[in-house]
Length: 87
Length: 87
Image 1 (cartoon, chains in turn green, purple):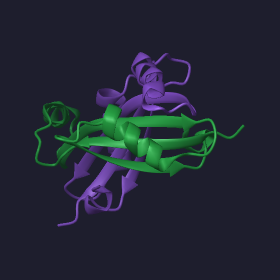
Image 2: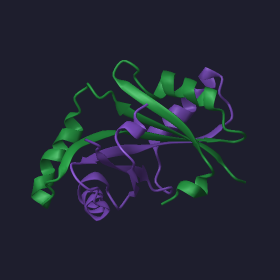
Image 3: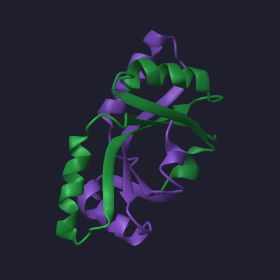
Image 4: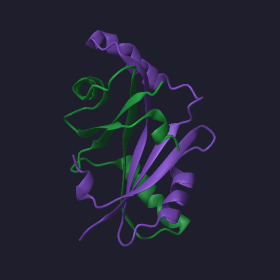
């Protein structure tokens, strides 16, 4: 059965400091990488719906359970099927 | 200046248990959501390059700093510009 998958990307708002991303950015010169200007680390949540994907429902889930709207922005999109996004 | 942004999505491999995602899935019925079959939570990392985005370089960064290849898969893609992905 094809799975309807909704992906929620949660990132810190641009004005909020991201120490975790900064730590990665600071480690890059040791790998010989010097042309990276910024690293930001957020969360990616995959929600599989048993039937039709429900974007409004997903938005409610993101707003209440997944993101802190004070410091985070989120973005929601439907991906075609589970198989389409497997690496 | 347009920023060349590479996005790295890091997710636990499908066979690895995701207690954090499971906790969210278990909380959904309290929100009245009953048609979600699975929730998986991973990381999304945005790497901004000062010049041309370098996918090979980004892959090396992901492999060495961002993902644990024993339990995680990652996927890399270039997004057009920083502005294109702002919510």
